[in-house]
Length: 199
Image: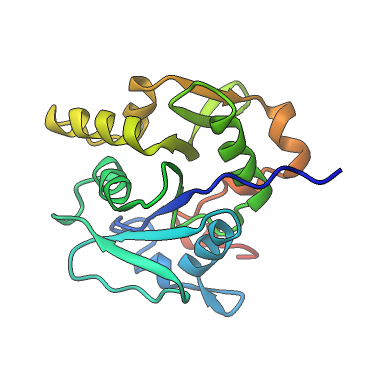
């Protein structure tokens, strides 16, 4: 029995950070011969028909073919502002959001987030690990996510995690997603050089 077609989705890759702890532009760091950012882009391209990278103004990172680049209005306003920029640019009613510094995203987990959201009445879907909701990756409905992000930013909020506090959320328990990603590689991100795969 074949799985139902994956619902159409956009993907937002947040690439607006300062790389302060890394000491240089971590998203350009080569991993297996390709920039770190390319790994996230290639993973989400497996589940999304529309892939968007959100970068600071005037920053033009190396991108794989078929990936759209959009810029934040102001530099380093935080991940919530970057998410808002991506939501406004998204072409599909559902988006999956990831960090550009996540080199080992499992497309099957991203697909599960999209399917779980579409099959529910929730505004967003997240994964849970060790009893805690994970900030990234997540899926959200473009309309609800945009409205909530806009209100939060108007109130001076900059934390991405605040978005989930404003939305109804479908939480994927570990026993739902871990069979697809036993080592939880999807949740890994790179903050320092030691975090690089095989570093």
